[in-house]
Image 1: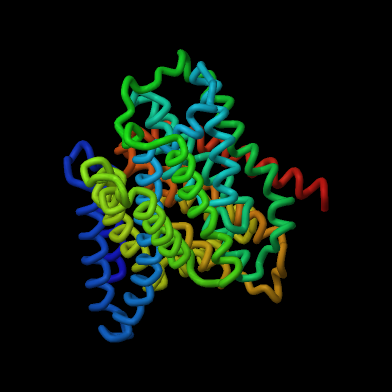
Image 2: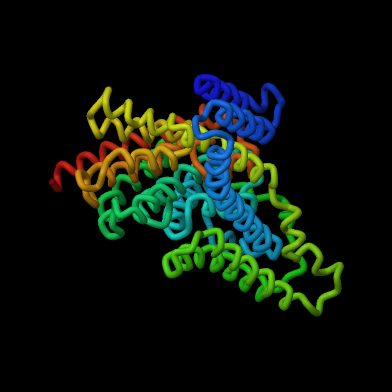
Length: 426
C-alpha cells in the first residue's frame, strides 16, 4: 500500500508538471493526489482511521496556516495595487535596460525577503513587475529571478525562510551566527544567476501602455498611505511573531483587519461607484484562489509522505548509505526542489540529535542554506515558486528549461562558497 502511495504521488507530480500539454489544471490534480494518498494511507496504517484522522487534522492545521497567510498577503498586495501604491516604488526605479533592471529587482527582492518571508516578497515583487514591464515573456523571466532571489535572501535570515525559522526556533542555529555564516553563500546564490542572465537579456525596458488599477481615483496621499500601510502590514508579521510567539497567519489576519478598517475610514465619504474598486472586499474577489487551492492539495499530498514515515525513512537511508554529512545535506537541498523542504528539514532535525550536533554546528548552518535555496531549481520546489506560478501562470517545463539551470548554478556556487568559508574560518 505504501508503494501505491508513492506511485500516486509520482503520477500526480508528473501531471502537475505536464499541466499545459495535457490541459488538466494542476489544482485539480493536487486535490486528487491529497484525497487518494490519505485514503490509501488510512487503509494501510496500523494506527487505524482514528489515528490517521488525528494526523490529518494536525497536517491540515499546518496547511491552513500557510493558505491563510497566502490569501491574506495576496489581498494586501491587491489593495495596495488598487490604490496605485506601487507607483511609490516604480516611479523611483529609473533603469532603462532590462539587464540593469534585473539587478535592481534581484537585490530589492533579496533584502526584502530577509525582512519579510520569501513567499510574501515574491507576491509583492511579481505584482510590482506588472507595473514595470509590458511583455509577459519578460515578466516570466523576471518572476523566475525573483524566486531565486527571494529564496536566497530568505535562507540567511531567521525570519526569511520557513526552514531557517524552524532551525532557529528549534535552537539549532542562533540569529547572529546564521546571518554571519550563510550571508556570503546566499549572495553568491543570487549573483551567479544574475551575471549569467545579464548576458541573456537584451533590449530596453518597455512599460505597460496603460496600467489597469484604481490609481485614477486616488490622491497622492492615499497612494502613499496605502503603500506604507500595506508594506507595514507585511513587515508587522515577523515582529508580531517574535514578540508574541503566535503563528504568523494570526499576525497577518490582524494586519489585514487593520488595513480593511483604515480603507473604510479613508473612503467613507466617497460615493459607492468611486470607491467600489478600492474596497478590500473587491480585492478578495481578484486574488487567484486557484493558487490557494493548489497549495492545499500539494501540501496535504506531501504531508502524507511525512505522516507515513517515508520521508524520515529516506533521510535515515541516506545517513546509512552515504554517511558524508555535506553530501547528504546537498542531496536534501536538491530533493527540496521536488518535495516540500519543511518535512525534509523536520526529519533531519530528528535524525541528528543536538547532544551530538549542538547549536551552530556545520550541519545546521549548511542545512539552512541548502534547504532554503535548493527549491529554486524547480517551480514547485518552494512556496515562492508556487506563488509565482499561480500569479504569472508559469509553465513547469518553461521554468525548468529557462530558470532551473540558473538556479542550479547559484545553488552550487553558494555551496562552494560556504564550504570554502567554513574551511578558512575553522
